Length: 207
Length: 81
Image 1: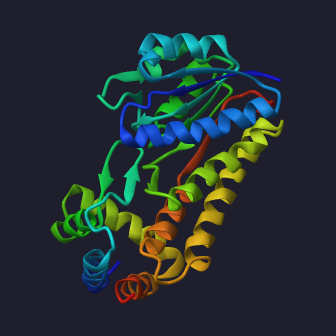
Image 2: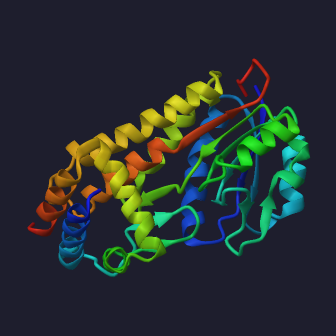
């Protein structure tokens, strides 16, 4: 079993939602026997993220992202390629916009991270209960394979399967009069298409 | 997406937004902090501003799978509830 750090800035309404999803994944990680550490709220600073990255086997980040950074809602960069040298040999999962587009491949190439799993474009969900639960389930269920000892590629497939279930739910599982039905299936399909896994040279992509 | 598809999509999104039970509450959240209400979604797509262009790109992507015509029909079905 591994030591995992869960990072949740929770510094804006959408980041709070992502923090709730993180809580679900963190509990499942504990149930799988992993040692879990939390870094959340005002404790999330650039230095703390860099430090956490170097001290744990894997970092699960739930917050804002751009093509080339993980960042606070204020725009302050928490992690970029120049500050991620501690990621050597580590695994990163970023439930965030865009970061698997440029940041992920850069970290893997420059610092020999084991893998970076995330999204290579905007991560978008339908707000409000119960619809948001479909997106949370897509992420939490999708990451289950990784937590239970399978590989990063299995987790990527798990995420794709999770968003496909959300697509099917909205397209075929709710009444046509549901006010957010189209948004649900359009954006679940979008998220599914933008899951990206950046692999390093390690043949072992388990946690 | 053809120009004709775009016009029909904007019309359907506008009709959907007008009939939405909570047209001024955020229904979409982006993981970069952006939240949009139904009326804002329609407005951005009508104006074709930067956010509108992102929304067109996303609808176009889903259209590759289910067809823009079906998306338009589904939006209009929601508007007619």
